Length: 255
Image (cartoon, rainbow, N blue to C red; front, side, top):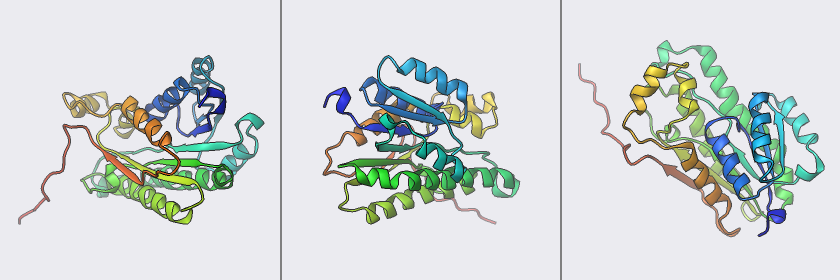
């Protein structure tokens, strides 16, 4: 497939972490890109960096607003309208304290971004995706949606929604050419975690030092691999952890 034949890729949350690495990975392969995020200066810089490699359109977008998502979708330039690969990456975790110490506002922000934002963008592009001969939705879930751990509360629950929503979409669109994947990373080292720890660099360093955690480029490689599978194959879900991470025994608290 030549670069001119490659399908348009839309990546949400492209200004940092997995989204940033994924944008760079697809650009290196010549895919036309639509990149979104809330920080215009980063989007502009990324667009300028990637433009020598491929065609790029960027837009500031708060996925939590259905009105903003609809306006963004309707106003895409003609060359970028036929999105065929949607990477729903925008998401966040806030706090890692026990539930009774968590801020309700943080819970609302996680739900609004990880659940409502995902739903807004996906719904807005379903008709476009369905119109393509073959299309792919890759939703960034997490092992937190599969396995409970202290401090995960709403974050883990929101990612469980992502995984189940992906499976339900897969059922709805079986036979249509729309493929849907729930990608579920484990311990990953990126700006995402700094946001979760409210910018506490010491806490970040303590957690990741010596862990050899997943890097954003690792996830970008996997996303590209999923997107480039033959059209008759669907990767339903893919859970990936660093080798240093594994399951532990169930906790027993004795009185």
